[in-house]
Structure formats: C-alpha cells, structure tokens
Amino acid sequence: MAEPDIDDASARRLNPHIPHPARIYDYLLGGKDNFAADRAAADELAKYSPGIRAGVRAHRAFLRRAVRHLAAEAGIDQFLDIGTGIPTQGNTHEIAQEIDPRARVAYVDNDPIVLVHGRALLTGTPTGMTTVIEADLRRPAEILTHPDVRAVIDFDRPVGVILAGMLHFLTDEEDPHGLVEQVKAAVPSGSHLLLSHITFDFAPDVDKDGFKKPYEKGAAPMVPRTHDEVIRFFDGWRLIDPGMVEVVTWRPAPDEYQEPIEGGHAWAYGGIAVKP
Image 1 (tube, rainbow, N blue to C red):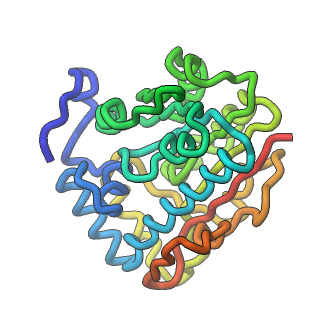
Image 2 (cartoon, rainbow, N blue to C red; image 1 turned 30 degrees about the vertical axis):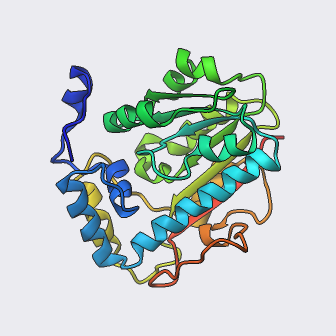
C-alpha cells in the first residue's frame, strides 16, 4: 500500500504497525487499503472464525439493503454515517442517491486513511451532497456540532443515523449506550437508527478470548455483545419488521446472491428503529 498523502497531525496518529478496525474490515472485504499489521490480524481472526470473510460480505449486504429501505420506503433523504470505514462498493451515498439524487450524506470516521480516501472517492451527485469528517463517537458533540456536518444535515428534519459495525469497538467503560443516546436525542421524530453489532450468540463454542486477541493489539478492542445488550441501543424507538435479527435474515433480497458462510452464521445482529 502506498504511503497516504495526509497532513502532519493525521500522520502522527497513523501507525501502520498497529491494526485498525477499518483497515482490517477493508482487507476482509478484499480491499487494498490496509497494512501488513491489518492483514495479519485479519488472518488470525479467520483461524477462530473461518467464515469471517463471507460474514463481513453478508454484513455489507445488510447495510446496502437497509440503506435502500431508508431511502426508498422510509423517505429518508439525509444520512449521518458514523464509523463509515474505508470506501468500497455500495457506499451509503451511492445507494441513497441512486434512489433519490438529492440525498445528502455526512460520513464520520476516526481513521485518517478513511478521511483521505473518503474525500477522494465519496463524492455525491450534482444535486446531492456528501462530506467526510474525522471525528469519534466517543465525543458525539464534536460530530453533532461540526460545521461540515451541519452544512449537509438539517437536524430539524428526519435523519437516518447509521452505526454499522462500529459499536463493538467501544468498551463498556466508554458507555456506548450513553453515547448513542446523545446522538438519538439530537435528531427529530421520524428519524431512523440503522445499527449492526458483532455477537457471540451464534457461536457459543468459539474461543472468545482468541477471537478478540487480534483486536487487543490494535487501535480498538473488540467487544461482542448479547442480544439483550445490543437491543438496548434501540431503547425508546420502534423497531421495524423483522426487528433486530441476524444480518443475513434482515429482509433478504430474493435476487441477492446468498453466499454460504462457513459455520452457518454471520455473527452479527442488525436492525432499524424509528423515533416516535
């Protein structure tokens, strides 16, 4: 991977020798925006979950279906995508703007590489708008008040908040439920929360400590959560059918290729809820 063109401040925060969740995910999806440390961590994960590559592709397919629902059926035309990861096929704005060219998307991630690639690749339609900022859900006020976010998102109108595959990188001590509540409180009635989260509920016999070990060496730990712990993120909002379920069973598309997953499960819950 070529050395990214980033500013000095971001360069100081970027350590290619420390695995980062966004770059591990990129590698598992078959991307090229990752370092040797990320690839080594992903390969170690595959020892404990041989179906992990098919699982992350299933997770990405869930995200595409869920965004398509928000844009086409729920009428959402502005999205706050927190923890977006490195751009790949089927990004939020591509799906939303295919349905509504005026759709707007604000992307947020805490990895400098995501910022660099995002600014280069996450461009919208002539009538829509996208922006990419470097920020962290651990400081939600910085996201919600950021001028670039405010230029794209009108918080007086319903917002599609996307927290896909990122809350399991927050420890209980960081109070992820409280952080999500701050974001939920900032958006009006009619807003939707799209969320997915890693779980061991579908893999009771896995070596849990072994699976989490590669992330312990990286920029963020992995904290899988149970059904009851994940569904708490939706508290106070109404889950839409089919509720919070394994990502492969959330409104599967009849024309979508169903890739077999070794072990049979994608190890992730997903769902959408609407604010009353």
